[in-house]
Length: 112
Length: 115
Image (cartoon, rainbow over all chains, first blue to last red; front, side, top):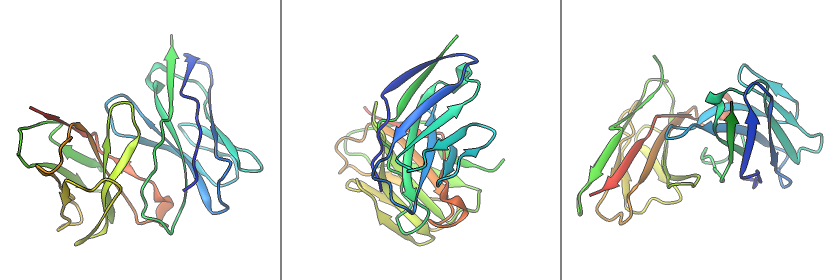
């Protein structure tokens, strides 16, 4: 699975958009970009995933650059409950064990 | 409600003791996983099972054992051979790789400490 690079930490004001970047310059053509988050002392939670088109769901939007070497997770109106560690993971839909490779992630602190 | 249930939430192990962590899911998922998380670190795969009565070692299987006798259940035993068992243990399930977007759903975790 391709390696990802994320900033260690970020702050965001409550009510503002949180933009979390991820670099995955070695991504393969069949690999998707997945985002999970982990609130303190809880299990990780799936947020969103995409291949090359931008995606949006009720939690967030995912913007993937045209060359697919980087992406940005956008939380449009961050709340205090969005404070968590956010993990960017790249992996194919098939042909592997199914395991997720979690790096260090980005610790997002939403401040009042 | 559909989901993954891990128990207990907190567990204490004495020296030389084996302990078993429970993981039950009612999502009708075929695949189940066990991960270990140390403080400030990402998750590492211990064991996984793609189907009943079959399981494979992950990256850090030494000192652990599992069974998969039922689709709904994937218990993890931390044996006395695991010399540093203190960690946060997470169970997950998903449809098999390549199906249904391959999204993993996680339980709330079990925090294991050594007395």
